[in-house]
Image 1 (spheres, rainbow, N blue to C red):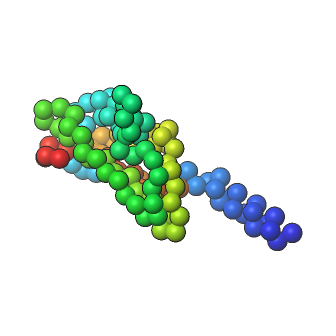
Image 2: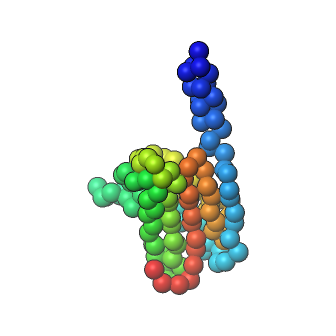
Length: 130
């Protein structure tokens, strides 16, 4: 009986885990072309032209991956994903990656970050160099 009660509690907690634990928008540069930014996010999360995207594959415990993409002659975007679980590695689903990073672009006109279900996501437009 205790095992089933513990399992039920875990399932209940997992059911609410997609809710953002910590989210915030930045105050820097505006996305010059949000659709273009989401297109690059999709490639980083799902791959492109038969190549693996920067965020595809296995994340070791605590591992962070980042990529800087030039999206125009005047703007670059910094993208970051981290597995916050320090005991276990995971393979982040491509669709979850694209949705969470794209959600930051949709919801934060100047970029932002979010911590969701044991993952940290950041999308940041900038005028600097990669």
